[in-house]
Length: 131
Image (tube, rainbow, N blue to C red; front, top):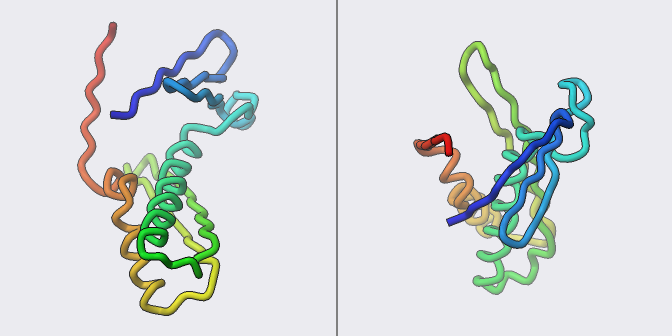
């Protein structure tokens, strides 16, 4: 199970996020009153999908011995229509290397099975408690 802790002091809206072994800063953009010191929450969500896609495709290609896949670039944009209560993620994947159409088709199918894609396209339950 993944676990993090996030904390904020009085400085708007700088948030420190820690796992057992890593540390990052999240912040709101200047336009929202932050200082843009780190990724915004929207960027962190998009980052999770991008990172998971890259890692999943690399693992699959390595398992298949597809050395011709020399790189993977993923761009993810995230937008939200608050009035319609709809969120939209757009993911563009660039496969670097000389690959057959069959390999490309298979890698696209694998991208759609990465754990973050599965999480974001299925029901999510959030349990919240004050401690």
